[in-house]
Amino acid sequence: MKYPIKNIIYEKLIENKNITDIELLKELDKIGYKTTIDELNNELMIMEIKGLLTTRWQSKNKRRIEVIKQENKEEMS
Image (cartoon, rainbow, N blue to C red):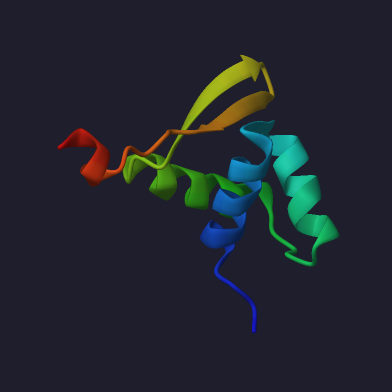
């Protein structure tokens, strides 16, 4: 059973703390998730809207992707 690509992306980001989009595409290719940059951008956009990650331009053609730390509701009370 293949996991949804968004789950794999999130796991890779948690492992690495931050990663570039090119490196992430290579990592996904290594583990058997053949995807295009357009498909990756679409998933990243959805995850960014949900507040799971943030993207920043590192250079003209490279973006840095970082996980946004989620605080537990128990810790806040």
